[in-house]
Length: 324
Image (cartoon, rainbow, N blue to C red; front, side, top):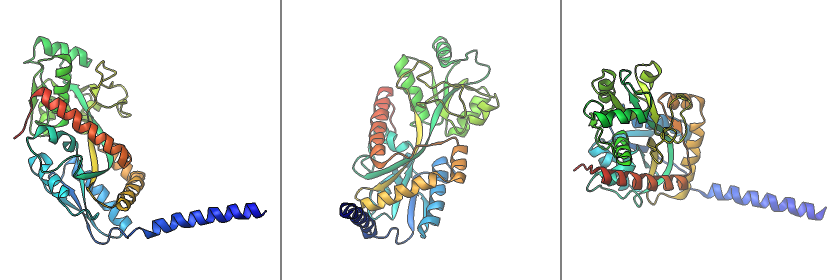
């Protein structure tokens, strides 16, 4: 009995110690938090950031205010956060541009490894290779055969130089030694519009824009850049299923703090994001945009960030793509 009481007291003391450890963490946030989005309002990253900001405002009791600072493909806003005070009062929500830009631009105002603490990849959406219904190809290999025979007729519409769909096409072309054309438009809307009209017979775009047209039969899905088949499009193969290994390409929505932000703030914010991602109304909204939740840990996201930077830098170099 004495031994049992001793063990119970020991467990109680350990529990008190853990509770005291959490209680010892300074309060956060203590004032409004700036949620910086390095793109114009209305885009997917902006929408995701506003979902996070609205829920965190309810949870934390302080406002989380979205601040759009567009320019230089996201480099301007990202650089602002890199140089912000590491006090938890400024955070970044960025797209896959975070992983692409270090290889795409000659110089950027931040170090992707040293300037930030990755918190999580909140959600991601695969890039989709598609064909206009007039194209006599049911699979991506067949489409590439057509492009090899007539590259002028069978080109890929993409949403802009340096976007992950644009680079996904270049990555595939390099892997299969294809001369297929890659026609960058100014955004996903114009590129999909050109594709729908048949002006450009093939395309690669982040899933949210072409998704309704694939469901309606106005476009034909050829392959997804995801690791697993998308639950909304189970009949569309992954790139690996289509015969192309190591060709994954997804548009992520990552959350970052400036380097030096206290660990307890990172832990607290990550825990709250996990709760937010489990809210039914949030799941419905984010998945309705064509995204799937990832919610990896800061350590896992750090590894993913490094992998993304290395991959896209390699693709940019192979394709000889660069933006001044």
